[in-house]
Amino acid sequence: MKRSLSVILCILISITALSAEEAYLNGENSLSIIAGFGDTAFTFEDNIIPSNSTSFTVETDNLSFWTSLTLTEEGGEFSLNRLSYLWTLDDHTQLTLGRQGLLTGYGYGWNPIDLFSEIKDPADPEADRMGIDAVSILYDDWDRFIGRAVLFLDSDFLCGTPSWSDISVGAETTLLLDSSEIKLTALAELTGVGENLVLTAGLGTYLDIAGAGVYMEINTDLDILGGIEYFFENGMSMIIEYFYHQEGLDLSERQNYFTEVFADSTLLEAFVPGYFAEHYILSNLSYSFYEYQTDVNLSTLYSPDSNSLMVAPMASVYTDSGLVIEGGYVGIYSLKENEFNEADLSPFEHAIQIGCSYAF
Image (tube, rainbow, N blue to C red; front, top):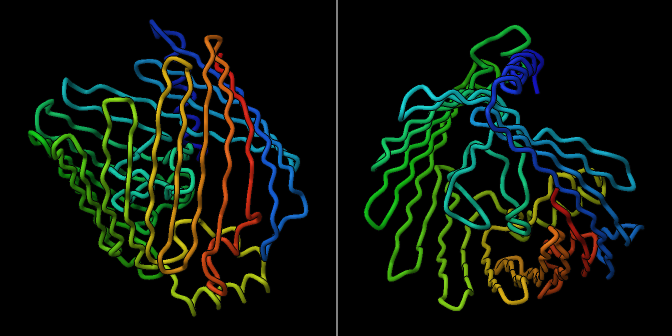
């Protein structure tokens, strides 16, 4: 968080702590162990990876604070996920300053119209994502229309010598109809020498058709998402999505990428499953055994052009004490040789994960 913004928010936190009628403090500690096996082109030396994470959240009517500390064999990593203050200007308008969640979109694995946040990982769509440093104003008419305008806060703009090239602004509008929604998003950035204006926009729709949710998202980079979700009466839910990534690599480009990665392994840090090739199909099935306080989940991620397949069955058991026990398997397979796909880039062909978390 930038220095000047942090000072402002610390003052607001102190005022809130002294004046808030109700404050909610929650914490969670989680421990997990991943055991990987099966050789790939980039297999790690260590096949047992333990980690421990502790997070705290504080919520009042105005303040949102969420931080976490993750410990691994390589050391600790501190994250300030949220730190923001909200003012209610009137019955329809709110102003928020600080590191805040600006997530939007209808997709489970991808959100092409989410132009503000970190990209979603389709291999782990429910993973937490860092908030965005911004000033945002939200208007809700409590009927048909929701609008948001955002000014993104850059470190040079806040603490250095400001210039127009430090400014990015965004907007989001949602139109609520009887059985459908329409979202429009836009982002304007002034970047580079000469302060060139870069405009990006997105359009998303959601339809309720015979109890099924059908949705579509597209942006001006020509990333396209189409999906359907359905909730069965017996408690099962199903999601199927198709994603086209315009900047995905074809076979020759993937082969060149492998050549570069072998020469410089640090390039692997920019690799994200689900964005490497052009075409992807995701499926997710989940079922809740309420009698046994257990959820089971099966996810698959298939790329028809790179011939990679990820399969991930998981299970979670909840206890009355707040302890959650989780376990699952992740397998990444190459369905055809010499495709230079995600399976070849993965550190392991197979991984087993066992973990538990406790809320306090």
